[in-house]
Length: 516
Image (cartoon, rainbow, N blue to C red; front, side, top):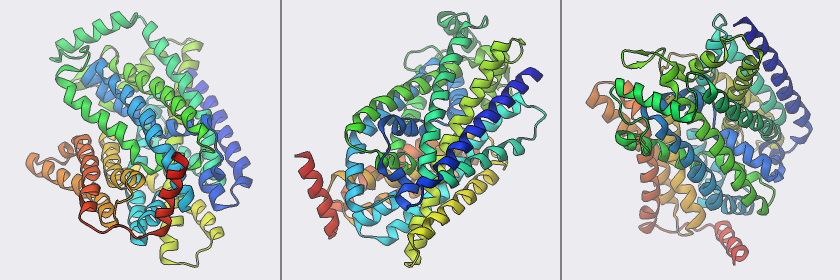
């Protein structure tokens, strides 16, 4: 195990040095607010697509989702990865990217709260949206930290987990604070390459492991172990009795990207519309490789992890780490050691890229959206400085939240994802496509996200007398919030007055000319 730790440590040092170098090198490109926040809207398709994909998939998918859902639903869990690719990436890019890029440029908005302000002529809407982003993305980022921490503990059992997470936090804060969006997306590009290489190597290596001995034998063994545990559906094509469980997770994690601000802003910055089609294809391929690969690995968990009281030993969050250590960390071979180090970098890349996107989005919510709304003399140069400071503050808050005793990272992420996307998905999509969407209608959508998740969480807690059970229902609550948001916005808009905003009329006029 000492060899594993040594090689992994060297790999982490090299990786960290590269991230810091990119962040510091990008400092000179962040002298303007648009440069710091959107990379000057000059980001190409490959970098944009990788930035989208790496923001989408953090360590949570490997440590939390793949371990838990793969254990419960078996190989049908790979449908979540397919859904993420086709719905969360391809459909999202083709439906949202072009209109988002056009309208935000016409309205001059650089953030999602700014878009709502300009589209619906409401400063209060901007402030509310910014508050939602800042409050609910903290637990989301904490879930990312916790996912990474599970593997750190496995590989470095004597290390202080809080120290390890603090190092990750400091590295993320450095390159985001120095290099802004430009540094974030280019580090994302390198991190994305590491993620693809890591997943492909890991799938090949685990399938070749004697305990699995090929895909067919591995599926047969998982099926046998599942039957012994009373689960006969682990090799069912559509999940059998797990179908409903899978369907809600597919909808939450796929359609959730349609309303998450750190995902939508990737469309703001892409350099031209020709790049959108390329970006859609690249991001879809990325999602297929990462998503399907992660859930496939998680589905093999029963072969490697013993069962205790009907649950995997150490809990769901330890399924994938134990798979990795048992297949790669104990045989003493240098190749196995190198592969484990690569996968460690994969998880670090997935985590830091997601953290960077969330940090940039959240710091802009305060510096660009909240402060100027209450202090109109807050100049652009102060906004850039404030974003650097709040990037550091936000990382610190996320770290503190992550070090609390929260057990299930999947539920933590699902809760935050459901609230944020539930608030924004309706007002954003209808605001882009339906010119008669009113301010009141948009407010109805924005408020419904918090309201629906809050009510359902309270009901589940009271009826079961268990907050833990309520949190386990987060996927259902999040999907309900998104559905309500999509319905209430047009319905309320039908019974309220149109928004009398001249620049919104101009935005639709420009888009209609460009499309026609």
